[in-house]
Length: 315
Image (cartoon, rainbow, N blue to C red; front, side, top):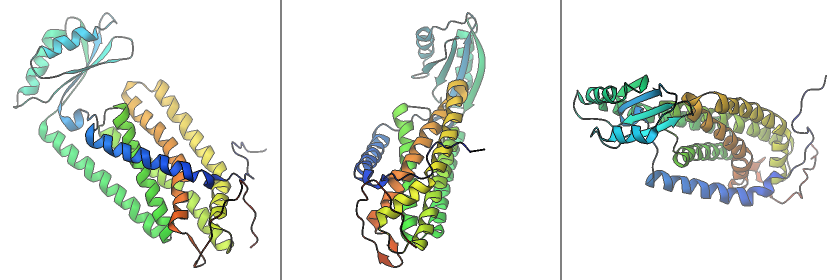
């Protein structure tokens, strides 16, 4: 029985010729993300900002978002965020962090007094300033240490040029993933950190597969030009890459469509992350080797266009 193939086994696509477009595009997106991150910032959730989050369910199944927002802002606790969840009368209300030990208690008393008649309180979360500060520190430290560990692994796992290419690709994926949070304004919380770390792992997996094949071909073909070698590496692993990306994409798409509001933000970011990592492994990490001057048997190969076809070099 023939196995399912989403990509032909014997493909000869000249992926490297696209580097003249993908590299400037990736650089532009990365710089734009950094600028937006520094100017606009992330939409931090209650985990990091502190405050009180209340999920309300309208007893009549129809919620008046404007009225809830007006009432919540009239409490005098600062600007309150009100967001409708779906179309069955669910509302998410975020009250900002209040000073003093009784600040959040006063928020809940006001909320119950104003909304108990028309709404059912489905969920309540309260995070104080000390807890939110500790979560920020712990979350940031966890991400930084994890990324450093991955970069250290890459440095010892591959030769110098391959390691630098993998590091560039991994950092590219992290930056663009953060850009998804900045542009979409998806709430950044502890679940978001889990999403970033998962994407780092996926990016590492995609890059290692291609670079393992690159290193294997470097040992087999001593005189093949760098461009042809890299095209051959990608084409020989493309069937596996497409199958893996498609499986992950369809699974995450199901979570986005049917997983509910609780995990939708996580699923959307992961869905975008799969696309970013797959693109990066082909059009960012691998072309970096050309610019770094990949060494074959201690001699720098000449890079020249292949015309869209990868020749089968003799051993």
